[in-house]
Length: 460
Ligand SMILES: CC(=O)SCCNC(=O)CCNC(=O)[C@H](O)C(C)(C)COP(=O)(O)OP(=O)(O)OC[C@H]1O[C@@H](n2cnc3c(N)ncnc32)[C@H](O)[C@@H]1OP(=O)(O)O
Ligand SMILES: O=C(O)CCC(=O)C(=O)O
Ligand SMILES: [Mg+2]
Image (cartoon, rainbow, N blue to C red):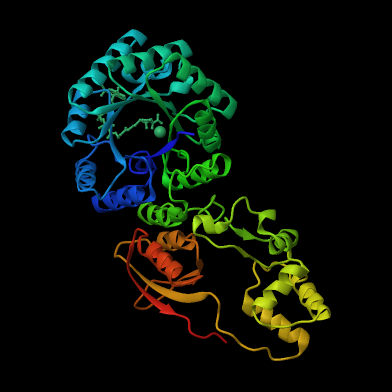
């Protein structure tokens, strides 16, 4: 199967409310995406602002120096000045978009269908005359009259575009319809390749992307963590995993997805929910007793692929949903031997402790000590705990920083305090690399001026 990823974190992703990348961040993200192995990077729309222009310039330089290998694209309206700005940067490809549904023609560009075809042909030819590859994007394609959409695609092709992006701009497709649409376009407009740009308004973007590929699309647009206008587009990590699972295609280096996701989380300020596919904190964490008993025998019972493929590891949590197999395993890992009767008693205590969200190892040891009447061997904590003191900038509303800090994964408690620092954050991490990521996330919150991190060495 021929399919690649166009990553649009730097263009569509930066259209997420509240997200702005600095030039440095843009370059760092582009480098990380290239190292990840995406085929194309939509690096931004250079006519939008001087910093985007500068960022793309530096990305193109890295491409020339061999530091970046993905194809670099600049976005552009069907406006000659936009094309000139993109082509002076010597990007590999200019992606020219034009809204082609009647709604867009009427409300935005105020053109007739015929006029729009002329504009598209004219601007695509103009870009080609600058010696650059051209993708034409039919914006709002999925609400466009199908016969007219075919005319648009043929016009762009005849003017020199070798790729056409079919944009589901308001995210209304569903998979069967998507496959039919792409099969039809591939048949009706030979001589070009198609991209799918799927928005996630109805939560079907990944499914639509796969359906488009079945219909003949060869490039999927995605963003890291699914960033983009409104609710965003196809999340890179989910679609990459789906392509691996269903078609055994490696579109990126899967074991690097997590680190790129963390990087974009840090720079975008948009935190991944813990239940986010593949790279969310809970993507490979199990809970129900039946599930844990299953995975202890064979992880395939409740995992579609091993977490190690994605550079992650498996875990399970203990609360009232737990069963004897999980508790037994947890105590074995802690090096504590309990007989069946003791395990049953521990389990009964866990189940009757209303409202407890997690039983950490230290809590389990405490219960086991009560049940057995023995002092059990204390052991070093298997998770690193730390306290991060945070100083806010002047004129910053501390409570708004507190709120933002409290949703960072790994943050367990946030307190506003008096004294040299303004906020105290208790964090918990699996290892020092994860602790470092959490502290970096704290430092990137708007309003945080400085931090001081203290490791917890012993707790009584
Ligand atoms: C679905 C998508 O996400 S497509 C990508 C959208 N990307 C962007 O909007 C990038 C960020 N945008 C910007 O920085 C600005 O909107 C700019 C620089 C592009 C244009 O700014 P301005 O000239 O101030 O115009 P403004 O944004 O208010 O309005 C858009 C104008 O572009 C026109 N336009 C919109 N789309 C297109 C297009 N694809 N081709 C040509 N003209 C277009 C509109 O008709 C309107 O023209 P008007 O000034 O004659 O009324
Ligand atoms: O250029 C594209 O492929 C897509 C443009 C866009 O972001 C959209 O229509 O949603
Ligand atoms: Mg879009």
